[in-house]
Each structure stands twice: as C-alpha cells, then as structure tokens.
Image 1 (cartoon, helix red, strand yellow):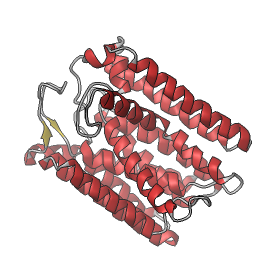
Image 2 (cartoon, rainbow, N blue to C red):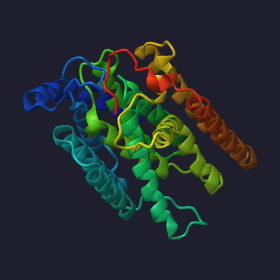
Image 3 (cartoon, rainbow, N blue to C red):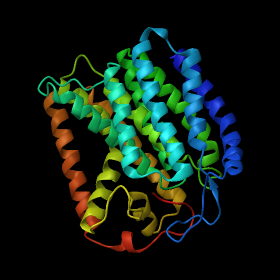
Image 4 (cartoon, rainbow, N blue to C red):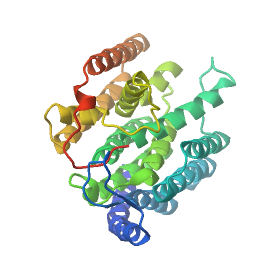
Length: 344
C-alpha cells in the first residue's frame, strides 16, 4: 500500500500544480466554454483542466510505475492519450460526434491489441466486440456525467478508490497503481473544480477518465469467482455513470432526440436540483450513491455466485423502476436548475 500511496500523492501534487497552469493556457488560447442560452454558467470557463489530470496520471506512472507490464501499460497510455487529445480538440473546435466515436473505437482496438480485453468463455470471438462496446460506452458515460461542478471528477475518484481497494486485496499491482494515479489526479483537480469551480475538465478529461476506468474494469479480475461475477463487479462499481447514461438515453429517445448530441437538463443531478437541492448538495448526494455502488461491488467479492447474480438482477430491476418513476413526471426535464454550471 505504501507504493500506492506514493503514486497517489505524486499524482495529486502534479494535478494540483498543473491545473492552474492549464487554466491560464486555456484562457490564453481561447479554449473556454462560453455562456449560452442552454448553459447555466454566466461567465467564460476554461476547459483544459482535463489535460492537467492526464499529465499528472501519465507522468506519475511513467516515473513510478512497474516496468513489468510494459505492453498493457503502453496500450492503456496510447488509448488514453488518443481520448484526451480528441477531447481537447473537441473543446477547441467542436468535432463531429462521428469523428469522436471513431477515435474512441480506435483507442479500444489499441487496448485489445495490447492484451487488455474482456475474456468471457461463452463469448469467444465476440469478446473483442463486447470490449469495444464496454470501453466506448463507459468513456461516453463519464463524458455525459460531466454536467455539474465536481461530479465527473469526484465520481471517477470514488470509483477508482474502490478499484484500488479491490486490486490491493487481490494482489493486482497494475490495476492498483493505475487506480491510485486516477485517485490522486482527480483529487488534485477537484481542488479547483468542486463547486464553485474555477476550471472545467472538458472532454479532454472526461473522455480520458472514462477510458481509463473502462480499462481498469477489464483488468480487474478475481480468480476465486466465476467469470460472470468477476465481470459484474466493475459494472456495479461504475453503477452511477451507467445508470445516468441509461436514464438520459431513455429520456431523450422518448422525446425523439439524439442521446449523444442533444444537450439537456435531464441528468440525475439536474433532477435532484429540480427537486430543491443546491448544485453542491446534489453532487454530494451522488457521491454517496457512487460510494454505495462501490460498497456493493466489494460485497460481491465475498458473496456466493447465486447471491451475486441475484443482487445484480435486483439492481437492474431497481434501475428500470427508478427510470420509470423519474420519466413518469416531467418536472426534472421542464424545470431548469439555477445557473451554476454547463451541462453536456
């Protein structure tokens, strides 16, 4: 654990130092999120905070990481770099969604070629396709979750903390080291991003974090558990972005809108605000929800296969019921939250 602590502390210091630098760079280059009718912030906000997270993550692991996992680390670094680069480009020039999707697929293929892929016995050749769907899905889920100050970075930090704890108990150093770097980098960034934020991570950070968390979910394996339960655990740990993306997708499709390209105030965070919470309170509540998912994920490592699958099915059914209840009323969609932050 001492090595993980060193990695986390180093990433924290680098991110905390790099974020204000990237904030100034963003203003100088004009890479800012301007106020608009559909947005809720009232002044231009710099968008390159995610680059600070990326730099802290890469630099820390390049210096302190174990050289025993070169092939996999190179694949993760390469894919993460692609996602961060296309995200920064999108922050600057607003790329077409199709272009971003193609880059994410390419990053996923690089991950597979480096040996990081889902291995479920009954899928056979379909494992590669499922891996790409998982990586692209989680990458975009984290991007969609970046809709309120501190929400995406805090959720990534919480999920990575549970990945770190799970990896430490299973003796999986690579997952633990990567997760520790994510935790430290996110905490360093949150110093400037928690409400009221002075900088946004932008797509450069959200896509990067989504890709890395997806890779961690693939690499985290439990030798004493069945493949199904072993795969269920990272899905549960990332339950908040999975649920929020499903909610937004259903909500927008019901209204005839494109879920990925149509902005809106239909995220879970916005619905909490519409019910009377402040932005900060909504984010803190969702931190608790994310933590609860992580606790359930850890419990699954000790549960029987039958109980684990029952819990997984129960969570899925609870999610369906929650979406039905949320969508049965229109208050959250029709009542915008008070101006504090932009939403994707």
